[in-house]
Image (cartoon, rainbow, N blue to C red; front, side, top):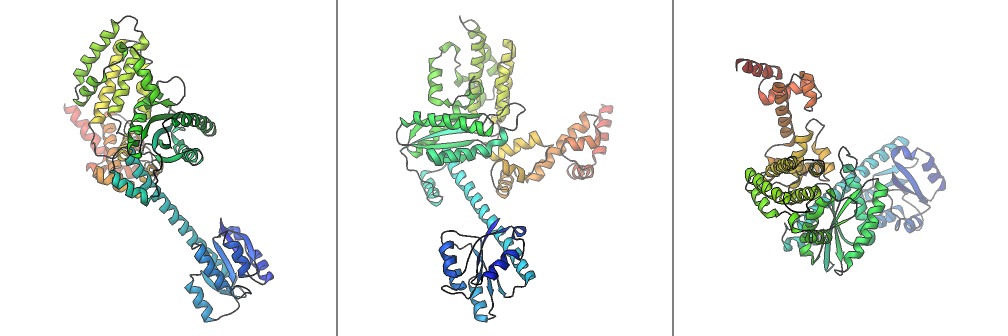
Length: 523
């Protein structure tokens, strides 16, 4: 609804305007009225509206004088002039001030309605333009803060961008807190609450802290808390615990909150971010739902017997060398050592495996392809495995997956990695730049340009190629009907599937199946 204010020194004109049409039908509501320009200005100077319908000749202050004052105070307000004077000088002045229309009394109802419709269209366009500007500004701001937390921006450039975007680093210490909805198996509702979590986090910053909220590409929210002393960390955690409980009640969802270290100066915020990221996997093995604090985790790890703690560095080196056989030999050696150690329990064996998985996850921490659901499978499976051989096999399977991730191009942005993963996993769904841009809080045009730049293919072309390749596998490896295959790879229109298949393969799906069937018979 847009707010309308009526101004006329003749009461019956105002009464007539109120009853002449159903204002709500146009998305308008009358919020006030005045009998002259001066009285109207007393109200409008502090209470802006979207549209003013005003007479032109009134005592104390004319309509044109009122328009000039309101325009200076509230440039986005629009005006319609009503007048009993068909004087060119008034029309000229109205045009000068950019009024929507100059209507003569008595009012022509059809012309008045048409003027209101056009005005509402302009208000809609203006509001949308403003929303796009704000959205693009938010994207730019988040991108700058995103690079800051990953230490991917020079301090000089950061300060320039900060001045432009009204980002102020005024605290002597900073601490990063990562927040995300817990993702459980077969439970997508928590995943869809990311926008609400980000909104609640911003509300927390506005009310109780100084700092910033950054919406990450993978959907989680980074809260950068500004502190005046290192000792303020405990008080901050107590406030976070309270906020977490309140937010979980409001959203009916469990939150995973991870606290990084306190660092001196905004230039070291990336260190706190890294520390929070490093201990984030402990949510997957923590039996309670408390906040994970990197300092507490480090204390816990240092207090454990050295015999049940893996030396992760040799494993990481083997990962980077893509040496699967070396990994197997290292695992055999370490598990044999553990088996021969007095007092070691099956739980210690599993915890040993978990520590390895955490170290490996951190080795590919820059990859957005590493999905929460994948991680949860890794850790859940560890605690359901019953034999040592099965445990070793599981860890090796994870290692193979990590090696695959580490083989991907390092210069690919996280959001494009995520889109590629979505295409591979969800090609049968209705995927588009518009829907994915909403999930990742990014402008769809920018996402399309970024995808084409880094993948060397348009989004739609890459998606179609993926679907057609999956269809080729089904055509040669199953007995599914053509209609079923089309649906299973994301084409609900059979004729469109045929058209796309022939475009990319050169022959029809039926011909493709027949050729491969004949080749198999000859073999």
